[in-house]
Image (cartoon, rainbow, N blue to C red; front, top):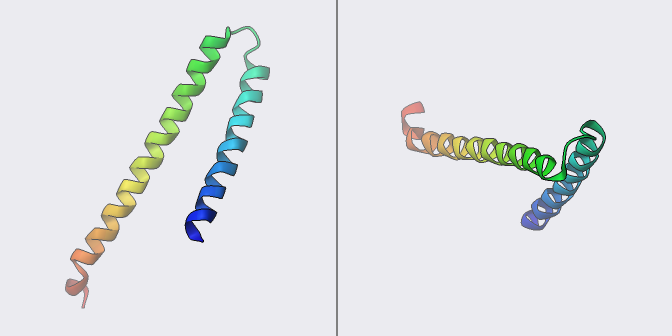
Length: 74
């Protein structure tokens, strides 16, 4: 059930973020050509994905470090 909830959450957030980016670029940059708007959006999404994966990797590493040094804390 947790996986289904996580998938639904990710799909919903992805849809909202995509819709928001679409309107942001449509209204903020009226004079830019479509390929430039797509490139800017791709850069923003790529940066968000990289930061999220970095955070997730750091979270997993800290969890493993806690397990490694569990006996030291006692």
